Length: 289
Image 1 (cartoon, rainbow, N blue to C red):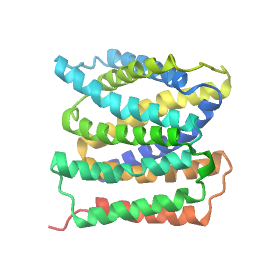
Image 2: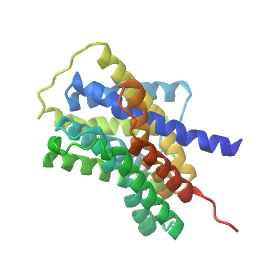
Image 3: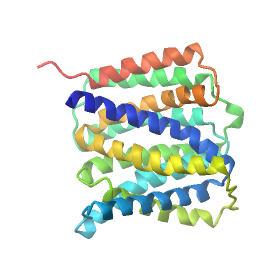
Image 4: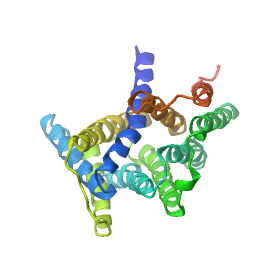
């Protein structure tokens, strides 16, 4: 049973997080990026606050702990989301974004080796390289260099760095936080981070069914569901190995887009999926004693 539970968590996270790219694109058709994020974070914050109150969940007792949780959230949730949404608004495709975010396992593994003293052997490095090659197969056919701008690429990199450093900070300082009370703090801090950007945005929102569906999925499915699973996995495992599953996020997005958007699942996508699975298997294979 523990093994099955450990297997289900990454699978659910990958599905929720990967499909989030599709619903984000739906949302940006009907809303400007920062307005969408501000509403999303507000809804998530209120839901998590109600859950914490209903279940009588304790909040951090010291200002230092509160501040550390807020910093982790500002990076993992706020900076990552702001960078990703601005990148898409400047014309960077979801596939290109996924490719850049797929660099996250390599960055986190290097930083974990440096700052968290995690034991990373040659097999893990080989798995990381194979996984990255697999991601390249998945997104290669979807790259559209004509729509890429330097500003959009800049925000994609900001998104990548926020997620990478946030995961490490979460593991080092906030691994014991409650997912409901801690999630409320992190979502609130992310909302505060978004507010200044609203002054530079010509706010537009189309209040229609597609917008509501996209907002509900991103606020509940991704901000509560996927991120709670991510924090649980970071708490229970090595952050370098947890980050390796991000290789499967663009794979998941490709599969979901095949069913929801009728996008073709080319041969290179299938080859990429198989390659990624091999890489993930190498990374998470237990050492022989």
